[in-house]
Length: 456
Ligand code: ATP
Image (cartoon, rainbow, N blue to C red; front, top):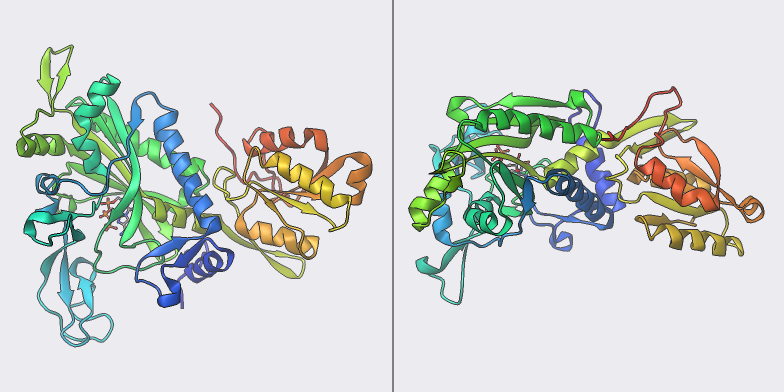
């Protein structure tokens, strides 16, 4: 039995919809799957790209104080010595003496195996970094690690970015990329996997202003989730206790989301102080300071880091968008995605497969595809086609009927309200653009707005 959140979202339904409609498949499925690895299908890859694009726009393109980079996954092994990951990036592991399952000691509620009730070994620290070898010789000297976070790529490039962009404090470096963690326990679909993508900003500030910037990023990041459609009541902050803080952190607050299995971390905001730059200066022998023109001295900036997993964010958006409602005799499943995230923005649906209707529909399809991801569906009844689009979150369907050939008008049907309006074909693109950017909002039958794009 899968659990339900108070909002009624069921993880099994999310997993099954994702599999059935081509959002997410188990990795290497024909071989029985690879534990905790997932493949994004044709719709999933669009959703994931849209999530990354929305984040990149918000933290890089729409700001003048953050720039992006794309660093390599394999880094010099000394990086992980300096960052403390070699020594400290571990979880306490306990093994069942009976069934040999392994558990994270800090997640165990009782002193016995949750599966078979067997006795457990004492906890030992298990390093979560994946190891591999560079070059043809597999020895200690050629050991490299798959990065467990992207942050270090930004710290080691601090001076490169500073000197090539001439940025002044406060400024940030952002990155999206793959990260790998040999997690002891995985599960809850794409919530915790061993290969995942992460989106991080390292925001460098003058020491003493770090607490103020920390508060700023907390609010900024919470607003981003809400703006893209996550219900505010499904988000909350959770402050880390002193004992729980990572080795580099002065303060950490998680943004938790009410996932189907309960409240869990969606994003972490950490005040890393000057830990990383200081460590890299020590280990590399290169200066990692910044010249403060006002104070006329070299300082080591502090860092505020908002970090979130792409996959976990995709899962939160899927869960929050999922809705079921009774429509006459049928259950209507709708993904109420914000239009910026929806894999398809529009679907073109000719009422018949006969000419000259097909020609009119394909002309509209070709025209709209210059602007958006557009679906074309001419199979089965129009009602079933609407349902198929609702289930994958397409905000608008365009229906072309025989009347269209006479009056040059088509029907736009809105996903959330199911309202329909007729518009001249000549006005179609402009009308959709206004609706997709929120100038013209979706309105629910009872008058409530489903989503609203904040406009500057
Ligand atoms: P947890 O306590 O859940 O293991 P963490 O505190 O170690 O996570 P961070 O190091 O703060 O996580 O990583 C930043 C973000 O990366 C998390 O908020 C989460 O969204 C994502 N993330 C971390 N580990 C995983 C994973 N194994 N699978 C998917 N996403 C992850």
